[in-house]
Amino acid sequence: MKKFFEEFKTFILRGNIVELAIGVIIGGAFNGLVTSLLDNIISPIIGCFNVGGFNSIHIKIWNANLYIGAFITDVVNFLIMALVVFLMLKGVMKLMSLAKKEKEAAPPEPSKEEVLLTEIRDLLKEQNKK
Image (cartoon, rainbow, N blue to C red; front, side, top):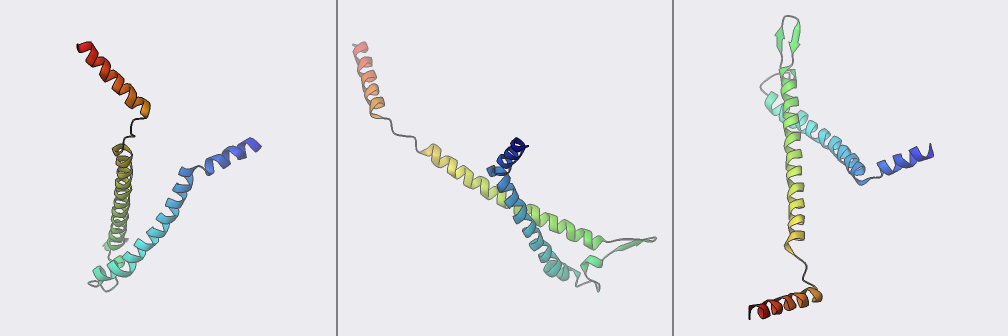
């Protein structure tokens, strides 16, 4: 049982799991922000043409009410969230590519031994030509 808890501790404290947990928490908070934006600003502006508000726009088919306004609100909510995630991912990928280019752009200078060996090689090539 002790080994199980040690493995679980190692799993939980791995960097990826902690980063994922932080991402989920921030995502939940951001979801609340986008929902508030839609419910309190965008939907009232769109719904000003309807007396009951945008979410109450519906189509009645026999005894069923199809709430088209609420569905459209959820679609807009999804699109805003997807756009923000896309932009964040694009930014992170750009930062990662810049860091990778910096690592690749600066090759290390040759050591003294490498310079000396290169000179010896070049001298041997000249002697073989003669």
